[in-house]
Length: 164
Length: 244
Image (cartoon, rainbow over all chains, first blue to last red; front, side):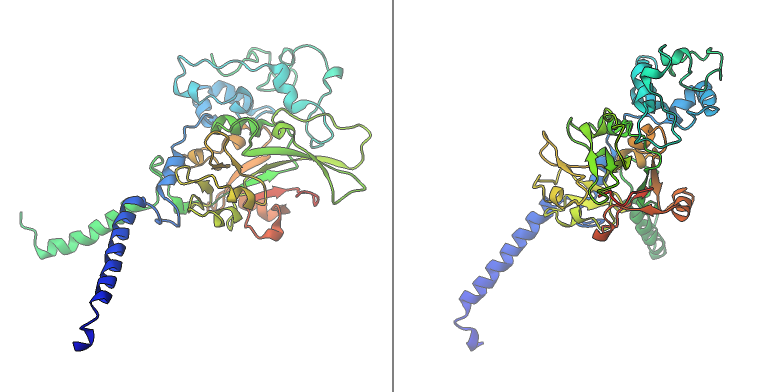
């Protein structure tokens, strides 16, 4: 051991490193979130945080659970695959509290033309109109938006939206 | 009651299995969702897109996207007969309120291209994040941890598709989450829900019953910038060669 007689400063040096490493390890344990690294180099709990965002679109399945009459009428027409909220807007509020949240009926003058205004950029088979050349009455006086072919119903479904 | 060594030998593995199950990947807000059973992508059918902007508006409503920023947007391409490689592209306000009329005498073709995060399997944006704030989730969605993001914007520069932006008030990177809060609950994304023509379809590539598989077999489907090998999962049907 005589070789180590004058090596005390080296042991102090190593000891300092060991202590510094332990301090680092303890601080790291507190600072790094528990779920970090569970799936990869990120905080796994972020998945839950992001998934907790509230939905604003209820989804057509939810609409149809109450408004099955409209869904049945719609299923026979050209708008069968147009989901409710594509026209009526996001209505999760209404679905969560149907009594107090009443949806506003969309304005057909804006709504219908958004899709059906003629444009060379649209796919050829898609039904398009030039508003200036089209019959000038409001759209719903001839077309029921839920089943838009003319004469496809007597209008008793009143072009109204879902809420009744 | 005495717990013998036999009891302990039986109970310990059972507890271990239970613990493993508890720790298994299930986002807390979605109890019936198993991460490993899904691999999400999106099908965008250009032959069906009418440029109505429903997807853009739905996305902004659903995800509180600030005005002037877009997680998804629609571009209108004009590829003239004389400049096949340099199409004219417009996207006024992301296509949110539609597009101006097409010139009557214009030659070439016009078409709409909906754009969004491609949720790349080998995404350039996640590779450059210095703090582990953006990542590919085990179910194939590129996400941002808002608590970890510093807003350095490396990822905004790295994305070859221009799908990220710095949020003007939160000062962190923001992007399409593929409506992660919806798809983990069995709903489709807001843009797919609002698309009137079915030009957008959420696709679960790990679900053998998903119609995407049949579609990919029977159609000529392309991704954007395939030469960058990003593993993009936004599949485009009917994509013109001029689209960038």
